Length: 414
Image 1 (tube, rainbow, N blue to C red):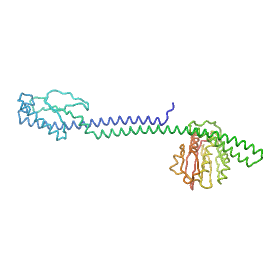
Image 2: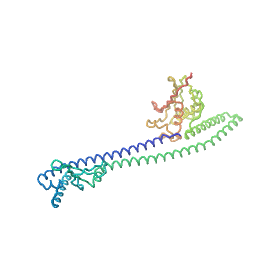
Image 3: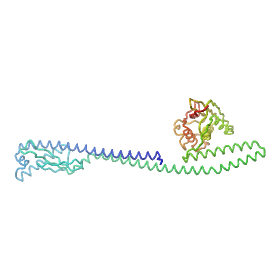
Image 4: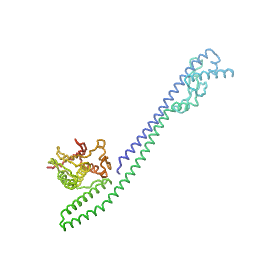
């Protein structure tokens, strides 16, 4: 099953979004761990300072020593020492800008610590070194620790959340717009298919009437009328073929063709001859420099005729005065180079990358009588690409445009 490029892009974008989300979540957890480490370091510093104050109090007051060592003492003294230790701890926490409620106890029991960021944690401060009894420590617990850490990283968390939310919303909005554009493209294609099919009946009728008219003109011996009807039949045939090619292009059905040896110089002469009456009407001058001695290409005659016809037709259409068209062919190694230069209104450089896109039309300024669907150059590009060639557009030295096509020659071309 063929997977469209847009679908692949959508899948890759979704994967990229998932990766960004994972990275952002990982970043938030890392930020939380850093904030926790900072909080732990601050508490450790405050408890160290509190330990020094308690050590000084122990030297000055035997009751403090007895209380910390768990020896019997009056309840009044015990309550007083608890309040004194609490005051020391609180004052040192406030110095470190920690204004959280806490509970503490004096213990000689080993307490297991949890590694989880958001688990309740006991902060221990050993009192060894200035007491007769070892393993006495202060155990400090902050019930609001997690809320405090989250509050400290609120800005980081909010930024990460908004970033992920924005990217997610952008992705889904873009996906919705893509689906909408795709549906519009499908509807446009269906419309073009139906429209082109509607052209086929009148074209058949025109061809049938032109043939009957030619037979009548032959019976009457009217050469002028027969010539006019021949032009009508020729243009009708060409229009019918163009309609068929437009249908193939719009439906993306591709080209079905028989490969044959085609003389491009001969094709150019045939195309110019088919535009003879129109050229005379426009007072056009066509200058030929068919210098390519090797001009045979493998492909469909009708494809190359359509390619040259579209470029020549554009050269006639987009000229505000008498068209002057220069057609050149030449060889370069095993390649055939075709260039068609006109003196028309030209194409601005900013439009060069887009003129081969389907339905794209360059504004013609003051010329309002030029009609078209914006498919001619798309057809030319598709034909050139089909035969492994390249096409480029450049500005003429004085005025107008030069289209240059490079095609590979047949290996047996003479």
